[in-house]
Length: 314
Ligand code: MN
Image 1: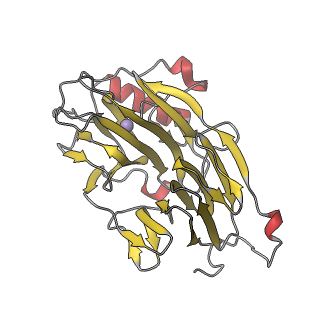
Image 2: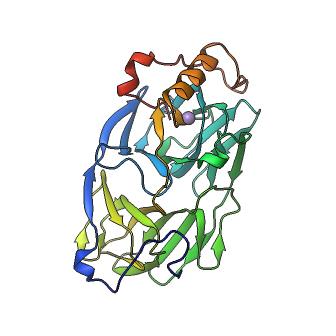
Image 3: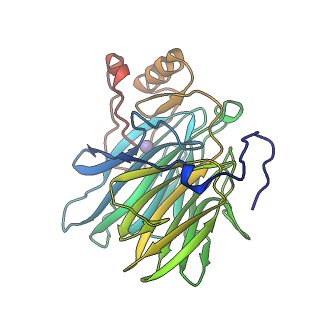
């Protein structure tokens, strides 16, 4: 699909058996009452390409409660990418954006130099919730850009004999997302039909990772389990999936991120001073603006003493 250009990763003819394949247990945590499986960052793996954060929530069903209720909180230096398999999320932010995300769509919020947002289950809902939130680190030259928000009701779908791909980041074959990303990137869900296989072409300059979302799936004859991140390294020209009874798999990737980032709470920066300043600005009601589209009260920033153990509000 792509030649070995620009970033200089050398991929030889190589023995398939030597390709990287490591598995990393997700960390169970919560956002308020919502249970989350955090696939990134984890101790052994901080990033996959520019992707620096991956939360999996659901599947769950509910009646009167609001499983997602993340009050207004700030971000800098990243993009948030929200994608649903089932249910709805209402997004509001300090730019005045309001959007209801539904399955097959995507919300991409570019924090740049600073934005605040809230995410919650809307009053009118299907009683189900099942999805993903990811963050993309912005490269240094773009991380102070103006904040923006985009909702796409339906991402591109690529259908093949064995299944279908929903593309929410980057380009695949003739399809591409009408979204602004600032690094080379790929993000898709791959649905494999029962007793079918599907081959995804990949850029060997990219590193990739997989997360089984549901169903049963074998990746190159290795069975996958949920709540496990599979890191595949670089130098792969394709990924092959087979499913006995149908499955969905998340595939993310990009060239290994060339900069060292510093993550604390909901901030992606480079130095502790930048983090300290962003925290101070949020506490002083400066820089980020107010989220007026929600009834929820804004979150207070955690104490900087917790610098070693940030717990993002996503
Ligand atoms: Mn957030």
